Length: 329
Image (cartoon, rainbow, N blue to C red; front, side, top):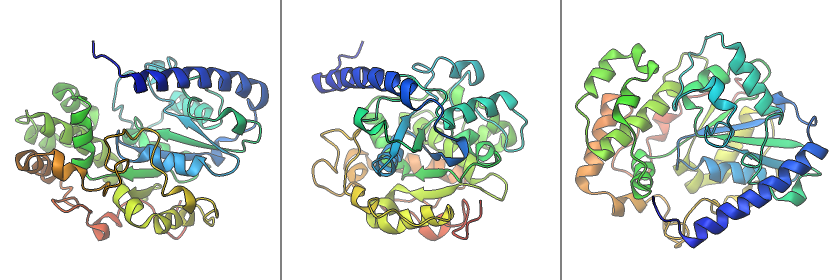
């Protein structure tokens, strides 16, 4: 068993205590306050910057974050409806049980200490807006974004080398057979065949990254989500916030831009941003040339070459994905 560091233990204890208190307060004060159609939904992969954006938006007045309500370990009810990781739901699939589950989540009707662990107890009484973050919903996003009445979710994407260097550092190895057996690849047998020879840890991590983003990005039009890159948030966060709020037909709250400079609570002390360095450049120092080449070769298989050896993506290529800035929801 991996030994936990004192900071990790301290953080987990804090989350348990805070989450338990919040759960009690939420049940007393907020149980029926929220509507699913008002929820702000943020999706992304692990280590993509989705937590940073969720913290940015939930730091606004009267906003609180519901944290990872699809985590099967901490939210037991989820396993009844989503029995395996990277669960795929076709955009036009009839899934009434799933719709009931998500509408409960988005209306704040399914909460527990884990889900409420990121909220400061003093913020609960005045809460009016839920910000809900998922790193396990990408393959369901085209379906989720089509539910009647919901505002366009935000999908955060980050350079796979940045994501994978962080994942390899944390020793989160994906399982090859579980990835290749995903029902989504039934639609693309040529991709499944081309990935059979992948074996290096960084190749399998790249396969997982591609699977999680290919499904929403190559879903049929109209794509009713807002695609935002982590790199653009870092380089020009104000403009990206404007894109998000424009898609919702709203103006950027005055306090939102002030949160851009705040690092995520999940960033570690050895992260580039905590060290005052360029947060986009870390993978250049952590991955070998061979690892970078292997990762980018997997992207080529999936036709996702808007990321390269450059720190930033081909922004023009990314702009063709997701809904436009003309309130297309």
